[in-house]
Image (cartoon, rainbow, N blue to C red; front, side, top):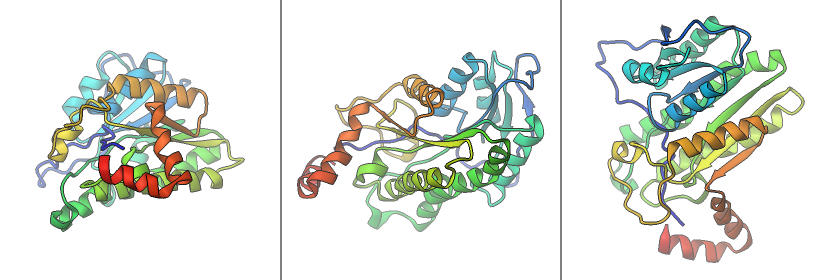
Length: 281
C-alpha cells in the first residue's frame, strides 16, 4: 500500500483584511466564443488543476480558472482565452460566489473539475483542531457546496459532467493522513451516490483517483514525499487521464491503473489487506 497526495492545490490564506472574491479577470488571448464548451477548473493556480486547464485549452474548451492566487492563475491562462476567477472556496459563501461569477461570465458550465484541496501529515493525536476543520472545509465541504451550486444549471441544460479529484488515500486509508483520507473517502462515496441520483439527467460524475503526483502538494502539507515506490506521476499525465475520462464519459479513473488492486484485495481478503496496510501503509 502507499501513502499519497492528490496533487490538488490550495493557496495559503491571504491577508484577512483583503477579501478575495470571484471577480473575473480576462486571460491573455482573444475574447472566447460562447459556442465552445465551458469548463470551470478549481485549484487551477498549480499542480493538477493548472495541468488540466492547459490540456482542455489545447482541445479548444473555454476555461474559467479559479484559485486564490491571481498571479499564478494568470500564468496558467497565458496563451489562452481563459478567464480567471480568484475565489476563496473555504469561505462560507465562497462556492456560491464562484458559481455565480462563472455563470454570469458564460451563461453555462458544461464541466466542473473540482481540483482545489490541501493536505496535512502527522499523527492524528497531535493534529490541531483548526487544521482538522481546515482540511475538511476545503477538501470536502467546499467541493460539495460548489457542486450543489453548479449542478442545477447542468441538469436544466440536460448535459454536463462533474469531475471530483479524489486520492488513493481515500480508498485505502493512509496512516498519519487520517483526516485527508476521510475527506477523500467522503468524496468517493459522494460521487457514487450523486451518480445514482443523476441517472437520466444527462449529467455525469467522474471520480479521479491518483496516487502520488509530482506537485508542491507534499511540501505544502508539511512533509515531503519520501517513498521510492510508487514514483510520483507528472501532473500532465493526470490531466491527460482526466481529459480522456471526460471524453469517454467514464465514472472512474485510477492513476496509475494498478491502484485498483488495493480495493480488490480488501474486498476479497480483509485480513490480508490490513496486514499489508499495517506493514506498508
